[in-house]
Image (cartoon, rainbow, N blue to C red; front, side, top):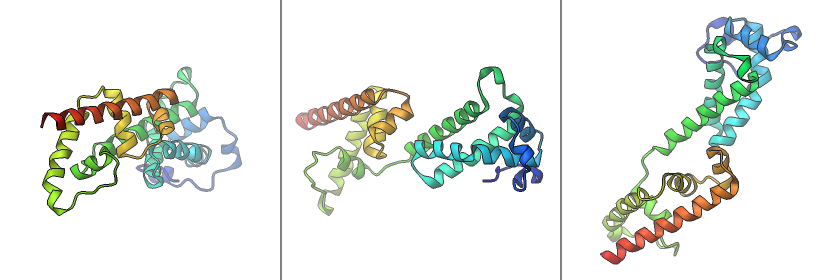
Length: 207
């Protein structure tokens, strides 16, 4: 895995010596920041699997995880001089960068528009019914109502429900992403779904 956006002598990460591999994390990071090709190669080999693995565990998409990992290594190169060993180990610093980038990537994906019909289907009664051509206009209206009902939920419940229902995340993945216990993630999903269905039922009753 090469470091994206780096100068030629850093981008080429092959043929690093055994001596470079034996250096401490701090020494490799310093060499990376100075543009040392061998240090860069050793740094990438030492951390690329952990960086990619963390990114994949958060975003759940190999291609997106690869992009996140590349960007994390690039930022490590760009901000190597800002690293402060008093605030934690190099691995902790790098993985924090990775996690933040992965969460940002998920937020960007979460912001993608979703068809109103898809939203209505997800939070429907679960009877397996799908609208035919004659019901398309009604379905669109229902989608708008669902979006409005979602806005009535507490932020943490809405976020958990969107990640679960709209993005297919498991409760465990949501717990890791949000930094909360697994039981709390499950509670937020159940409570959010219950409130959403109740809000939709009230709208139907009013109509």
